Amino acid sequence: MDELFLHYIWKYQKFNLTDLSVSDGQSLKVFYQGNHNQDSGPDFAEARIKIGSIEWAGQVEIHINSSDWIHHKHQNDPAYKNVILHVVWTNDQEILIEGQPIPTLELKSIIDLDLIEKYKRHIQSTNEILCSDQFSSVPQLTKSSMLDRVLVERLMEKSDRILHRLKENKNDWEEVTYKTLAENFGFSTNKEAFKRLTDLLSFSVLKKILPKALETEALIFGQSGFLEGEGDDYKKKLRSEYDFISKKFQLPDTMVQAQWKFGKLRPDNFPTVRLSQFASLLHKHSQLFTFLTQTESMDVLKKKLVVSVSSYWQDHYDFGKPRKKPIETIGISSFENILINTVAPLLAAYSKYTDEQKFIDRAVELLESLSPESNRITRKWEPLDQKAKNAFESQAQIHLFKNYCQKKRCLQCNVGVKILSK
Image (tube, rainbow, N blue to C red; front, top):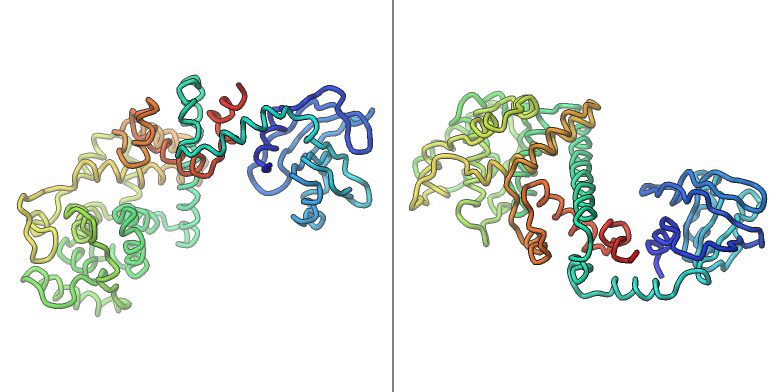
């Protein structure tokens, strides 16, 4: 038995509702089970019940054993003083609030055993997506509503991280955009390395030389640790520029090149290539946050963000290592990745910060207009006839799999609830 299952049982009233009674023998009638609380505090708020002849409104707390109230130290938390009903699987200990017993409903004798067995079989499935065998039987409307819900959750989670970073950076949106964009360029492999770079090189320093392309590259590659040691003429040129700039701004120590990862990466994803693209984009857009939040046209975004890289990096993927086939600009896939993982979250965060709905609406519209991502997670949904149509759906699929399927939170998922409710 687990608490999530008991939350599901209470939320959907999946037990025998006739002749209910609480621990002291008084009758119990449930008018409204309450709103499920996903944050700290009692599990359900604003419930309405009747115990004996008295109607109550307040909070409901749920545990496997009533003694868990003590184990969780709720007796020391003022947030639990307004609990009007304790719902438990086993009532193994009387619990008091300010000297009075809490009315307690024991569930183990009033739940259908078939439902318990069905849940056990479901949760013990060896499928990565537990409901995959029954997924096709769920109405598309249910699936779509869950994707809508988790996409909003994903945007809110990302926006909360951005707002936390904003607070750390004294409400400097340009600095936060710079740091967010940097992590985006690092992908999962070099995300931490890019983060380290922006810790060593603040945007307030970088923006002073952004109008000059060569100096911008020199500063970024120098702080990244890539200008140490011998190299070709271009590397030496950047090193000379970097030595002057670092002394001028009294920059801290550089990164060590070994902090950057090349293994198992295609040349187009080498950190040297990504750093050159990052430098070019910042050089072209020194006020990136303003541009990203105020530009509504996808065509304008594409035109401005698909920037050309410097002539050296059009022909090289690392210092002294020429390309077989030159490239001129940031690729379309990289452009779309920036929109998905930097622009949409920034718009969501700015919407929350300003309390203006139009920015979150633009974030959603942006994702709906972009091609779907294709990766190991989105491909898991394809055999279930759920191939993503756009980035909105692929982002939702990623969040659903990571935060619900992998964590077996089926009872908090519209699809899982629909299957178990059959």
